[in-house]
Length: 418
Image (cartoon, rainbow, N blue to C red; front, side, top):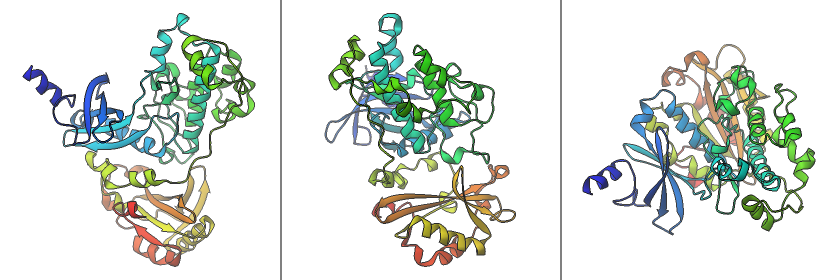
């Protein structure tokens, strides 16, 4: 018995002291190659959560896994939506990383389907699930996140049968886009991946997610034929489905939604509510930028302060961009608004050794306060280099040129005080 307890503690499982004094780990809910997921309960408040325990040594010893963990955390930090699994916080020790997440007690969609006759949801329940899936993915795409691994195993259900999109390990963020504004990495599950992804062509992440939705909903063939269009240029986007397809106009009342999912009872019509617009930057977003939630140091990344700067301003976005443009005339860049968002591109050569561009991201903290993030993008040929590549950029000169438009410059440490 003592040996068993020791093994459980070693694996990060139940038994022993609460995890970092905050969570009591219970039974294992599932496991993968590099992680285990446990049922847990918060010491303060008793909330039930799921804790994903990642073995750092195994991740570091496998090519490509450390960036996948970082992508998952970065994507989930951006997302606060009722149909996206919520990341509460990230904890770490010398040996392990712990992702504390919302608990979805209904299992995954694949398991739910396997337990049903003919392994198919009734149409009313399928509509409800798909409306929620489209709602969640539309929100993700509006926040610059393409999931890239949409499949029933990654669609979880809560105790009321509501959908929760999970597993953002293969997600693509805006800084993943190439110069052509597209993604190029072939990834995901082949059975659900779009043709252009399998052919290793440049692709639109949102359109690739739309194809995966079509595979999940294949029995509704007329709608699916628009999603499973091999041509990404004519494939319908998930964002337009709710507004333009009559199948989405018929939904369920609150009572019949749950009954339909579990028992297949007839549907009743209610109005479909579109996803709300993306919210402004909130306290969760700001706190998530703090060093306590920054995993980059765990994997030996270089000093981010050399590549990223943040400031707050009460000036309008237009005024801020105008000032950045004026500064560019002296520092050698021009402000450009393109597919990848707002960028400062060099007028000739590079901004400095190893720098291809500087991206600009603005978020509303509280009117009229804006948080502006400046991020140096390393040139493709210099991805393996060190921090010396970015040390030549004139941050101090930029501070001087921006002048009064800046309310205050902020490090990661003091962002929580904005």
